[in-house]
Image (cartoon, rainbow, N blue to C red; front, top):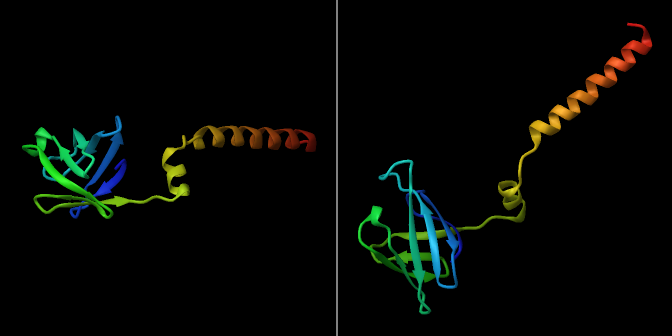
Length: 120
């Protein structure tokens, strides 16, 4: 069940595994605002999913299916699949500014040395 999910409203939920049958869900719904919510979620052996999010109301139950999670009230969370390239882009640290600064210093130093050798 761990991964990224999106519902039919375009809201994204990140499900992180805490233990074998317990998960933490980080989500946001347009109705709640930009702060989002965090809720514990449990998965029973039969595929029953229970989400206890006080920000969303009473505990919600659903069923884990191949195409995602189908909740009792009719909402469906569909999994988002990412390629290894997409995952690498999201998870890597960006060092663009440091790389650019070093490259610029080397370039300008080389230019300055050649300009002095040429007598400019």
